Length: 513
Ligand code: GLA
Image (cartoon, rainbow, N blue to C red; front, side, top):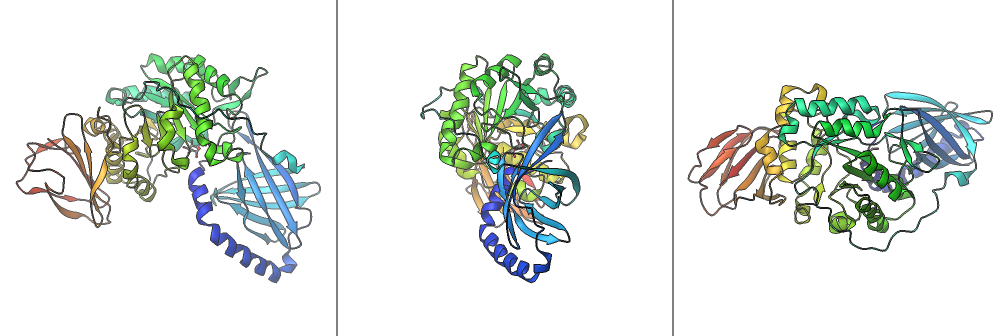
């Protein structure tokens, strides 16, 4: 299940007034449908155990309150996050409600248990049984103390934005040892390694639980993590992994809560070179104000681990992370909710990042989430815009597609060395929008040799003929040289400025010297 954590959280917040209205309507509706009242015996706490790949069982709790005809409560999905019931209602003998993660629950009592049908995004579904449990079992674990706020020394890594691949956007729960090995091979054979991609990152769902000594162990999808790291290392690449400061990850797998130092040691012993650390269920225990101390805890543990590990925070842009991320030991931090493979999601995220430009620099980067290039939800023009914009933003370039089966066009986008050169520029200064004219945005990024990268973006639905004066580019006069990074061509600069046609959702990316 490729759920969308932060988008869901945002949606919850945005829907708050609506929730009030829908509760109002619901009460009225339930009054009308008194004959269709929820079946007796739904109230209480219920647990649902669902089998997942790798021999793992995930737990969801339903906490239901029934007062006469009124049903409300919450779903603690994957034991990770509390979500209110949306639109609870009766349909025949089923109580039906949904949660913001796009899951609908159809529930009917049968003796001591509930029969539950879970419907994912209106398409696939799963049958399950819910057993009654004491409500205390659904509460988060006791709060562990956090360290006093301090500053972790820089680890000296990620002097330019990290480049690599991450399993989540394409594979979700389907990732396994074989896919990671084949991906490492593909990074080398496709020319991506030569173009600068290094990190091969396993996202959520590799975890099983803990052994008798409390050491975290991978599930059956990953039989030998050290052997996998060795395999990746012999190809000249580095291996990344994922965990959470909470007891469970966003997908409900084992997290590092209370085991931070032990897990950092385990990761170091396996030869792990990169950790993505995802807030998830920590939000059931701590407040937003605790983000820094909690992330610092793992930052300190990684620093003590004796192995260089890039530290990537995933907190969906909460808590003004950019103001304290480096002090928590972070090399990068997420500035947004989860990206989706469509123009709206990508462009809403990407074009909104300029405000954070001053926080990025060598060793510490804003992360607007991983790439969707090649996943099929956008056109090639849009993927070029995605890749160009991320490069102007000095964003980490983490491919999120199936590298083993990509088209030549996708490979050309991901390996465009001229565009990658902008992303990886040694000065490490993030670009910003300097001119906004209707749907046209001009972004500029200073480069280490005194030249400047410019992105002329057309966010409209139509091809636009565009003229931009050198003054609008922020240049005192005509540049000596101009290079088009997608055409791979030098352009003779005209006296007045640059002009060209840009397709809908397209970009022209230039370097002016
Ligand atoms: C969150 C993160 C995603 C991904 C999933 C895995 O939603 O933001 O990038 O890691 O969790 O469960």
